Length: 144
Image 1: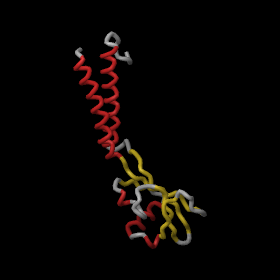
Image 2: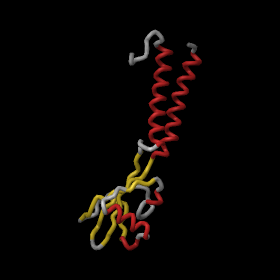
Image 3: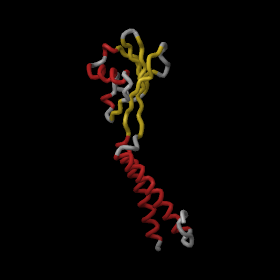
Image 4: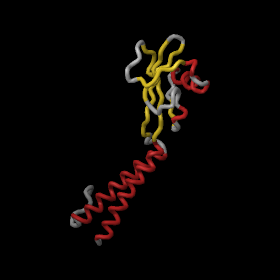
């Protein structure tokens, strides 16, 4: 094979990895879970809010989370409390203080996540194959 074919295969691999980053953005989601009632608010807590100060939608969301449900949303606008994207939130309700954790994570099980993982694997294979064909054409692929 010619050098231009090796270069093209290499750049296809780079393109696939770059496209995986773009597609992978769609796989980021926010998770909100309850850490239970606490006696003392940790220093890393982003904010403390009163349950009564929350909107009705946020109150319903907090009720679901405190009941043990795990909430996963894509839009940070659906997170309870102040609209910070992630971190810990303390909620005072009925004389108790509950700690909620809000985190951003890559959900590889979504269509975007699975596509991004597949594109990265294909990109790495294409790049490694281009390098192998260019520098070691006498050797077969590494898995045979």
